[in-house]
Length: 142
Image (cartoon, rainbow, N blue to C red; front, top):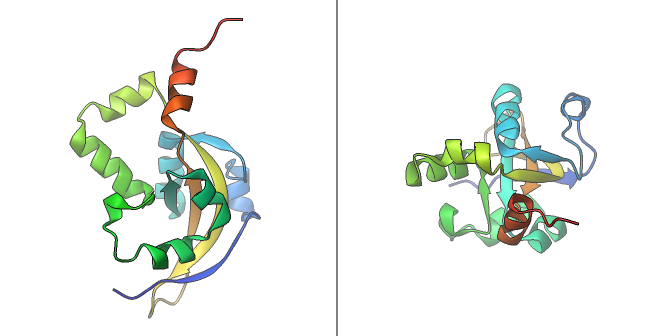
């Protein structure tokens, strides 16, 4: 597999994504982000580790984890995650109605494989942690 060439990540996003609310720090339901991904042809990479998401670039991570199977990495393409989740749990989509997965937007960049003319845009997002999901599900009364 050819290693992707990655243009530098940035926290400045193209205006068309900004108009859709895709800006650093935005928190977006994974279903809405998937719709944007499909309509705008933007790859989305979900990170499970906050420090990795904030301190490294996707290019560095793809290189470092190139020998690790996709489902075992601390990040995953959102389409692969959703496919795995729905295959593992046929009620996954229904469960998102009860407990939405809110993704925090971290960065924007572009990927190009050898031989591709135009780099593909991507967004890097951070998955919520399990303790955050529990807190959102059962808010503490004040």
